Length: 218
Length: 217
Image (spheres, rainbow over the protein chains, first blue to last red):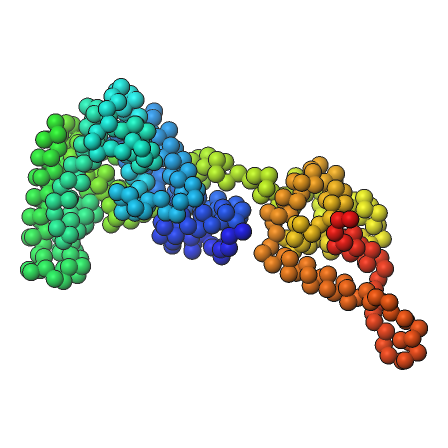
Protein backbone atom coordinates (compact mmCIF):
# COMPACT_ATOMS: atom_id res chain seq x y z
CA UNK A 1 0.00 0.00 0.00
CA UNK A 2 1.48 3.36 -1.00
CA UNK A 3 1.84 6.01 1.69
CA UNK A 4 0.97 9.65 1.42
CA UNK A 5 -0.28 12.51 3.55
CA UNK A 6 -3.81 13.54 2.65
CA UNK A 7 -3.82 17.17 1.49
CA UNK A 8 -6.52 19.79 1.75
CA UNK A 9 -7.86 21.24 -1.48
CA UNK A 10 -5.93 24.45 -0.79
CA UNK A 11 -2.68 22.55 -0.38
CA UNK A 12 -3.43 20.51 -3.48
CA UNK A 13 -4.06 23.63 -5.53
CA UNK A 14 -0.63 24.94 -4.58
CA UNK A 15 1.08 21.86 -6.03
CA UNK A 16 2.76 22.23 -9.39
CA UNK A 17 1.65 19.89 -12.16
CA UNK A 18 4.32 17.25 -11.52
CA UNK A 19 3.48 17.04 -7.82
CA UNK A 20 -0.28 17.05 -8.38
CA UNK A 21 0.04 14.15 -10.82
CA UNK A 22 2.34 12.27 -8.40
CA UNK A 23 -0.22 12.80 -5.61
CA UNK A 24 -3.02 11.56 -7.85
CA UNK A 25 -1.09 8.40 -8.68
CA UNK A 26 -0.14 7.78 -5.02
CA UNK A 27 -3.69 8.21 -3.71
CA UNK A 28 -5.05 5.93 -6.41
CA UNK A 29 -2.46 3.25 -5.67
CA UNK A 30 -3.39 3.46 -1.98
CA UNK A 31 -7.09 3.08 -2.87
CA UNK A 32 -7.82 6.43 -1.25
CA UNK A 33 -10.37 7.21 -3.88
CA UNK A 34 -11.83 10.30 -2.24
CA UNK A 35 -8.46 12.05 -2.34
CA UNK A 36 -7.69 10.66 -5.79
CA UNK A 37 -11.00 11.94 -7.12
CA UNK A 38 -10.36 15.45 -5.82
CA UNK A 39 -6.84 15.45 -7.30
CA UNK A 40 -8.22 14.32 -10.64
CA UNK A 41 -10.90 16.99 -10.59
CA UNK A 42 -8.29 19.62 -9.87
CA UNK A 43 -6.04 18.46 -12.67
CA UNK A 44 -8.91 18.48 -15.14
CA UNK A 45 -10.16 21.87 -13.93
CA UNK A 46 -6.65 23.31 -14.20
CA UNK A 47 -6.40 22.58 -17.93
CA UNK A 48 -9.85 21.85 -19.34
CA UNK A 49 -10.68 25.40 -20.38
CA UNK A 50 -7.34 26.07 -22.06
CA UNK A 51 -7.44 22.72 -23.85
CA UNK A 52 -10.95 23.59 -24.97
CA UNK A 53 -9.55 26.86 -26.34
CA UNK A 54 -6.74 25.06 -28.11
CA UNK A 55 -9.10 22.57 -29.74
CA UNK A 56 -11.96 24.99 -30.46
CA UNK A 57 -9.97 27.00 -32.99
CA UNK A 58 -9.21 23.89 -35.03
CA UNK A 59 -12.08 21.44 -35.18
CA UNK A 60 -15.80 21.82 -35.99
CA UNK A 61 -17.90 22.95 -33.03
CA UNK A 62 -19.74 19.65 -32.63
CA UNK A 63 -16.43 17.80 -32.30
CA UNK A 64 -14.83 19.98 -29.63
CA UNK A 65 -16.16 18.30 -26.49
CA UNK A 66 -15.37 14.83 -27.82
CA UNK A 67 -11.79 15.78 -28.64
CA UNK A 68 -11.25 17.47 -25.26
CA UNK A 69 -12.55 14.35 -23.57
CA UNK A 70 -10.19 12.18 -25.62
CA UNK A 71 -7.27 14.36 -24.61
CA UNK A 72 -7.89 13.80 -20.91
CA UNK A 73 -8.51 10.09 -21.37
CA UNK A 74 -5.18 9.79 -23.21
CA UNK A 75 -3.40 11.80 -20.52
CA UNK A 76 -4.81 9.78 -17.62
CA UNK A 77 -4.27 6.46 -19.42
CA UNK A 78 -0.62 7.35 -19.74
CA UNK A 79 -0.32 8.77 -16.22
CA UNK A 80 -1.74 5.55 -14.71
CA UNK A 81 0.26 3.36 -17.03
CA UNK A 82 2.94 2.98 -14.40
CA UNK A 83 5.54 5.09 -16.13
CA UNK A 84 6.67 7.90 -13.87
CA UNK A 85 6.12 11.34 -15.42
CA UNK A 86 5.49 10.17 -18.99
CA UNK A 87 6.06 13.70 -20.31
CA UNK A 88 9.75 13.44 -19.44
CA UNK A 89 12.30 12.40 -22.00
CA UNK A 90 10.23 13.26 -25.07
CA UNK A 91 10.18 16.31 -27.26
CA UNK A 92 8.22 18.39 -24.74
CA UNK A 93 9.49 20.19 -21.68
CA UNK A 94 6.68 19.90 -19.15
CA UNK A 95 3.32 18.37 -18.30
CA UNK A 96 1.66 21.47 -19.71
CA UNK A 97 3.50 21.22 -23.02
CA UNK A 98 2.70 17.50 -23.10
CA UNK A 99 -1.05 17.88 -22.63
CA UNK A 100 -1.18 20.62 -25.29
CA UNK A 101 0.78 18.39 -27.66
CA UNK A 102 -1.75 15.62 -27.13
CA UNK A 103 -4.56 18.12 -27.79
CA UNK A 104 -2.85 19.16 -31.00
CA UNK A 105 -2.46 15.57 -32.15
CA UNK A 106 -6.01 14.57 -31.28
CA UNK A 107 -7.25 17.56 -33.33
CA UNK A 108 -4.95 16.55 -36.17
CA UNK A 109 -6.24 12.97 -36.00
CA UNK A 110 -9.80 14.20 -36.35
CA UNK A 111 -9.01 16.48 -39.29
CA UNK A 112 -7.03 13.76 -40.97
CA UNK A 113 -10.06 11.51 -40.71
CA UNK A 114 -12.36 14.27 -41.97
CA UNK A 115 -10.22 15.13 -44.96
CA UNK A 116 -9.10 11.62 -45.75
CA UNK A 117 -5.35 12.25 -45.69
CA UNK A 118 -3.18 9.46 -44.45
CA UNK A 119 0.41 10.43 -45.20
CA UNK A 120 2.39 11.15 -42.06
CA UNK A 121 4.55 14.22 -42.08
CA UNK A 122 8.28 13.66 -41.65
CA UNK A 123 8.30 15.10 -38.15
CA UNK A 124 5.49 12.87 -36.92
CA UNK A 125 6.09 9.71 -34.95
CA UNK A 126 3.15 7.37 -35.46
CA UNK A 127 4.58 4.79 -33.06
CA UNK A 128 4.02 7.12 -30.12
CA UNK A 129 0.26 7.42 -30.07
CA UNK A 130 0.07 9.52 -26.96
CA UNK A 131 2.16 12.27 -28.45
CA UNK A 132 1.62 12.08 -32.14
CA UNK A 133 -1.77 10.59 -32.81
CA UNK A 134 -2.63 7.24 -34.22
CA UNK A 135 -1.26 7.64 -37.71
CA UNK A 136 0.56 10.83 -38.39
CA UNK A 137 -0.84 14.22 -39.26
CA UNK A 138 -3.08 15.62 -41.96
CA UNK A 139 -2.04 18.01 -44.67
CA UNK A 140 -5.47 19.59 -44.67
CA UNK A 141 -6.30 23.10 -45.82
CA UNK A 142 -6.42 24.39 -42.30
CA UNK A 143 -2.68 23.94 -42.14
CA UNK A 144 -2.93 23.01 -38.51
CA UNK A 145 0.51 21.52 -38.26
CA UNK A 146 2.05 24.42 -40.13
CA UNK A 147 0.47 27.03 -37.86
CA UNK A 148 1.86 25.31 -34.79
CA UNK A 149 5.25 24.79 -36.41
CA UNK A 150 5.50 28.43 -37.48
CA UNK A 151 5.63 29.62 -33.86
CA UNK A 152 8.08 26.89 -32.88
CA UNK A 153 10.37 27.68 -35.83
CA UNK A 154 10.36 31.41 -35.14
CA UNK A 155 11.08 30.85 -31.47
CA UNK A 156 13.86 28.34 -32.12
CA UNK A 157 15.78 30.90 -34.17
CA UNK A 158 16.08 33.30 -31.22
CA UNK A 159 18.30 33.65 -28.19
CA UNK A 160 17.03 32.83 -24.71
CA UNK A 161 16.70 36.54 -23.85
CA UNK A 162 14.73 37.27 -27.01
CA UNK A 163 12.49 34.25 -26.42
CA UNK A 164 11.71 35.61 -22.97
CA UNK A 165 10.85 38.98 -24.50
CA UNK A 166 8.37 37.27 -26.81
CA UNK A 167 6.93 35.06 -24.08
CA UNK A 168 6.32 38.00 -21.78
CA UNK A 169 5.66 40.77 -24.27
CA UNK A 170 3.53 38.95 -26.84
CA UNK A 171 2.16 35.76 -25.27
CA UNK A 172 1.94 37.38 -21.82
CA UNK A 173 0.87 40.83 -23.11
CA UNK A 174 2.98 42.61 -20.50
CA UNK A 175 4.02 46.27 -20.98
CA UNK A 176 7.44 46.74 -22.58
CA UNK A 177 8.94 48.39 -19.47
CA UNK A 178 7.97 45.38 -17.34
CA UNK A 179 9.32 42.98 -19.95
CA UNK A 180 12.64 44.82 -20.09
CA UNK A 181 12.99 44.68 -16.29
CA UNK A 182 12.19 40.96 -16.19
CA UNK A 183 14.65 40.16 -18.96
CA UNK A 184 17.44 42.22 -17.38
CA UNK A 185 16.83 40.43 -14.11
CA UNK A 186 16.81 36.98 -15.71
CA UNK A 187 19.79 37.72 -17.98
CA UNK A 188 22.25 39.96 -16.06
CA UNK A 189 24.99 38.90 -18.48
CA UNK A 190 23.50 40.73 -21.49
CA UNK A 191 26.09 42.99 -23.17
CA UNK A 192 23.65 45.90 -23.18
CA UNK A 193 20.71 45.93 -20.86
CA UNK A 194 17.30 45.54 -22.43
CA UNK A 195 15.30 48.74 -22.92
CA UNK A 196 11.59 49.08 -23.69
CA UNK A 197 12.59 50.20 -27.21
CA UNK A 198 14.58 46.99 -27.66
CA UNK A 199 11.56 45.02 -26.49
CA UNK A 200 9.31 46.70 -29.06
CA UNK A 201 11.80 46.01 -31.87
CA UNK A 202 12.20 42.35 -30.89
CA UNK A 203 8.43 41.92 -30.75
CA UNK A 204 7.97 43.62 -34.10
CA UNK A 205 10.65 41.47 -35.76
CA UNK A 206 9.08 38.32 -34.36
CA UNK A 207 5.67 39.26 -35.66
CA UNK A 208 7.11 39.95 -39.11
CA UNK A 209 8.91 36.59 -39.13
CA UNK A 210 5.76 34.82 -37.98
CA UNK A 211 3.75 36.40 -40.81
CA UNK A 212 6.38 35.33 -43.31
CA UNK A 213 6.46 31.81 -41.88
CA UNK A 214 2.68 31.55 -42.14
CA UNK A 215 2.62 33.08 -45.63
CA UNK A 216 5.37 30.72 -46.69
CA UNK A 217 3.23 27.81 -45.60
CA UNK A 218 0.40 28.80 -47.91
CA UNK B 1 -2.09 48.36 -33.34
CA UNK B 2 -3.27 45.87 -35.91
CA UNK B 3 -6.56 44.03 -35.54
CA UNK B 4 -4.57 40.95 -34.59
CA UNK B 5 -2.76 42.77 -31.77
CA UNK B 6 -5.97 44.23 -30.44
CA UNK B 7 -7.82 40.94 -30.55
CA UNK B 8 -4.94 39.06 -28.91
CA UNK B 9 -4.85 41.60 -26.07
CA UNK B 10 -8.61 41.36 -25.66
CA UNK B 11 -8.44 37.57 -25.57
CA UNK B 12 -5.68 37.63 -22.92
CA UNK B 13 -7.58 40.15 -20.79
CA UNK B 14 -10.82 38.19 -21.07
CA UNK B 15 -9.14 34.95 -20.04
CA UNK B 16 -7.34 36.63 -17.13
CA UNK B 17 -10.64 38.04 -15.91
CA UNK B 18 -12.16 34.56 -15.81
CA UNK B 19 -14.02 34.90 -19.08
CA UNK B 20 -12.74 31.60 -20.44
CA UNK B 21 -10.37 30.50 -23.18
CA UNK B 22 -12.74 30.11 -26.10
CA UNK B 23 -10.97 31.84 -29.02
CA UNK B 24 -13.82 31.66 -31.50
CA UNK B 25 -15.43 35.05 -30.77
CA UNK B 26 -12.04 36.65 -31.44
CA UNK B 27 -11.02 34.53 -34.41
CA UNK B 28 -14.36 35.18 -36.08
CA UNK B 29 -13.48 38.87 -36.38
CA UNK B 30 -10.60 38.27 -38.83
CA UNK B 31 -10.07 36.22 -41.96
CA UNK B 32 -7.36 34.52 -43.96
CA UNK B 33 -3.76 35.19 -42.98
CA UNK B 34 -4.76 37.35 -40.02
CA UNK B 35 -6.96 34.60 -38.64
CA UNK B 36 -4.12 32.10 -38.88
CA UNK B 37 -1.78 34.54 -37.22
CA UNK B 38 -4.21 35.18 -34.38
CA UNK B 39 -4.81 31.45 -34.00
CA UNK B 40 -1.07 30.84 -33.70
CA UNK B 41 -0.65 33.64 -31.15
CA UNK B 42 -3.63 32.56 -29.01
CA UNK B 43 -2.27 29.00 -29.05
CA UNK B 44 1.12 30.28 -27.98
CA UNK B 45 -0.46 32.31 -25.20
CA UNK B 46 -2.43 29.34 -23.85
CA UNK B 47 0.63 27.10 -23.95
CA UNK B 48 3.12 29.61 -22.62
CA UNK B 49 4.75 28.87 -19.30
CA UNK B 50 4.20 32.51 -18.28
CA UNK B 51 0.43 32.25 -18.65
CA UNK B 52 -1.13 31.79 -15.20
CA UNK B 53 -2.99 28.53 -14.70
CA UNK B 54 -6.58 28.29 -13.56
CA UNK B 55 -6.88 28.09 -9.78
CA UNK B 56 -9.20 25.61 -8.11
CA UNK B 57 -12.71 26.95 -7.60
CA UNK B 58 -15.17 24.30 -6.41
CA UNK B 59 -18.16 26.55 -7.11
CA UNK B 60 -17.10 27.17 -10.69
CA UNK B 61 -16.25 23.48 -11.09
CA UNK B 62 -19.78 22.40 -10.15
CA UNK B 63 -21.81 21.96 -13.30
CA UNK B 64 -18.90 22.85 -15.60
CA UNK B 65 -17.59 20.98 -18.64
CA UNK B 66 -14.61 20.04 -16.48
CA UNK B 67 -16.92 18.32 -14.00
CA UNK B 68 -18.47 16.21 -16.75
CA UNK B 69 -15.04 15.17 -18.00
CA UNK B 70 -13.80 14.42 -14.49
CA UNK B 71 -16.89 12.28 -13.86
CA UNK B 72 -16.12 10.19 -16.97
CA UNK B 73 -12.50 9.84 -15.92
CA UNK B 74 -13.45 8.90 -12.37
CA UNK B 75 -15.62 6.10 -13.67
CA UNK B 76 -12.87 4.97 -16.00
CA UNK B 77 -9.89 5.23 -13.67
CA UNK B 78 -11.10 5.48 -10.09
CA UNK B 79 -14.16 3.25 -9.87
CA UNK B 80 -13.83 0.99 -6.84
CA UNK B 81 -12.80 -2.50 -7.84
CA UNK B 82 -13.82 -5.58 -5.92
CA UNK B 83 -10.46 -5.52 -4.22
CA UNK B 84 -10.83 -1.92 -3.09
CA UNK B 85 -14.34 -1.94 -1.61
CA UNK B 86 -13.99 -1.61 2.15
CA UNK B 87 -15.85 -3.64 4.73
CA UNK B 88 -17.59 -0.45 5.80
CA UNK B 89 -18.76 0.08 2.20
CA UNK B 90 -20.09 -3.47 2.04
CA UNK B 91 -22.01 -2.91 5.28
CA UNK B 92 -23.41 0.34 3.91
CA UNK B 93 -24.42 -1.48 0.75
CA UNK B 94 -26.25 -4.04 2.87
CA UNK B 95 -27.92 -1.10 4.64
CA UNK B 96 -26.93 -2.35 8.09
CA UNK B 97 -25.94 -0.19 11.03
CA UNK B 98 -22.90 -1.48 12.83
CA UNK B 99 -24.80 -2.33 16.01
CA UNK B 100 -27.30 -4.30 13.98
CA UNK B 101 -24.59 -6.20 12.16
CA UNK B 102 -22.77 -6.96 15.40
CA UNK B 103 -25.99 -8.30 16.92
CA UNK B 104 -26.53 -10.62 13.98
CA UNK B 105 -22.89 -11.66 13.80
CA UNK B 106 -22.89 -12.54 17.50
CA UNK B 107 -26.00 -14.58 16.95
CA UNK B 108 -24.62 -16.32 13.88
CA UNK B 109 -21.41 -17.28 15.67
CA UNK B 110 -23.26 -18.48 18.77
CA UNK B 111 -21.64 -15.71 20.83
CA UNK B 112 -24.66 -13.74 22.00
CA UNK B 113 -23.31 -13.38 25.49
CA UNK B 114 -20.04 -12.00 24.18
CA UNK B 115 -21.71 -9.39 22.00
CA UNK B 116 -19.57 -6.54 23.34
CA UNK B 117 -16.38 -8.46 22.60
CA UNK B 118 -17.68 -9.27 19.11
CA UNK B 119 -18.28 -5.56 18.67
CA UNK B 120 -14.66 -4.91 19.68
CA UNK B 121 -13.31 -7.39 17.13
CA UNK B 122 -15.65 -6.20 14.38
CA UNK B 123 -14.59 -2.61 14.99
CA UNK B 124 -10.96 -3.65 14.57
CA UNK B 125 -11.75 -5.40 11.31
CA UNK B 126 -13.70 -2.48 9.88
CA UNK B 127 -11.04 0.05 10.80
CA UNK B 128 -8.18 -1.95 9.33
CA UNK B 129 -6.55 -2.94 12.60
CA UNK B 130 -6.94 -6.66 11.99
CA UNK B 131 -4.78 -8.21 9.26
CA UNK B 132 -6.99 -9.69 6.58
CA UNK B 133 -5.19 -13.01 6.63
CA UNK B 134 -5.71 -13.56 10.34
CA UNK B 135 -9.51 -13.57 10.25
CA UNK B 136 -10.78 -17.16 10.47
CA UNK B 137 -12.89 -18.56 7.67
CA UNK B 138 -15.72 -19.20 10.13
CA UNK B 139 -16.02 -15.49 10.90
CA UNK B 140 -15.80 -14.53 7.24
CA UNK B 141 -18.42 -17.11 6.33
CA UNK B 142 -20.88 -15.74 8.90
CA UNK B 143 -20.20 -12.15 7.84
CA UNK B 144 -20.52 -12.99 4.16
CA UNK B 145 -24.05 -14.32 4.72
CA UNK B 146 -25.03 -11.15 6.56
CA UNK B 147 -23.51 -8.86 3.93
CA UNK B 148 -24.69 -10.85 0.92
CA UNK B 149 -21.10 -11.38 -0.12
CA UNK B 150 -18.52 -14.16 -0.17
CA UNK B 151 -15.65 -14.94 2.20
CA UNK B 152 -13.21 -14.25 -0.65
CA UNK B 153 -14.66 -10.80 -1.34
CA UNK B 154 -14.65 -10.02 2.35
CA UNK B 155 -11.01 -11.04 2.66
CA UNK B 156 -10.22 -8.69 -0.26
CA UNK B 157 -12.22 -5.92 1.40
CA UNK B 158 -10.31 -6.38 4.64
CA UNK B 159 -7.06 -6.34 2.73
CA UNK B 160 -8.06 -3.09 1.00
CA UNK B 161 -8.76 -1.36 4.29
CA UNK B 162 -5.87 -2.88 6.23
CA UNK B 163 -3.60 -0.41 7.96
CA UNK B 164 0.14 -0.82 7.42
CA UNK B 165 0.75 -1.78 11.07
CA UNK B 166 -2.27 -4.05 11.47
CA UNK B 167 -0.13 -7.14 12.01
CA UNK B 168 1.79 -5.47 14.82
CA UNK B 169 -1.43 -4.31 16.47
CA UNK B 170 -2.87 -7.80 16.35
CA UNK B 171 0.27 -9.30 17.85
CA UNK B 172 -0.18 -6.96 20.81
CA UNK B 173 -3.76 -8.15 21.29
CA UNK B 174 -2.75 -11.80 21.03
CA UNK B 175 0.11 -11.30 23.48
CA UNK B 176 -2.29 -9.71 25.96
CA UNK B 177 -4.65 -12.62 25.47
CA UNK B 178 -1.90 -15.12 26.14
CA UNK B 179 -0.82 -13.36 29.31
CA UNK B 180 -4.39 -13.09 30.51
CA UNK B 181 -4.92 -16.85 30.18
CA UNK B 182 -2.19 -18.46 32.29
CA UNK B 183 -1.41 -22.05 31.58
CA UNK B 184 -1.43 -24.71 34.34
CA UNK B 185 -1.96 -22.27 37.15
CA UNK B 186 -2.77 -23.90 40.42
CA UNK B 187 -5.03 -21.26 41.89
CA UNK B 188 -5.26 -22.99 45.24
CA UNK B 189 -1.47 -22.79 45.70
CA UNK B 190 -1.39 -19.20 44.70
CA UNK B 191 -4.03 -18.39 47.24
CA UNK B 192 -2.14 -20.31 49.88
CA UNK B 193 0.99 -18.23 49.26
CA UNK B 194 -1.00 -15.08 49.73
CA UNK B 195 0.28 -13.74 46.40
CA UNK B 196 -2.21 -11.98 44.19
CA UNK B 197 -3.62 -14.35 41.65
CA UNK B 198 -3.48 -13.30 38.01
CA UNK B 199 -6.58 -11.53 36.77
CA UNK B 200 -9.20 -14.08 36.01
CA UNK B 201 -9.91 -14.06 32.26
CA UNK B 202 -13.51 -13.39 31.46
CA UNK B 203 -14.55 -16.77 30.04
CA UNK B 204 -17.05 -15.16 27.69
CA UNK B 205 -14.46 -12.75 26.27
CA UNK B 206 -11.95 -15.57 26.02
CA UNK B 207 -14.43 -17.59 24.00
CA UNK B 208 -15.00 -14.71 21.59
CA UNK B 209 -11.25 -14.04 21.29
CA UNK B 210 -10.70 -17.68 20.50
CA UNK B 211 -13.18 -17.47 17.63
CA UNK B 212 -11.79 -14.22 16.19
CA UNK B 213 -8.09 -14.78 16.83
CA UNK B 214 -7.84 -18.51 16.91
CA UNK B 215 -7.17 -18.89 13.22
CA UNK B 216 -8.52 -21.62 11.02
CA UNK B 217 -8.41 -25.23 12.15
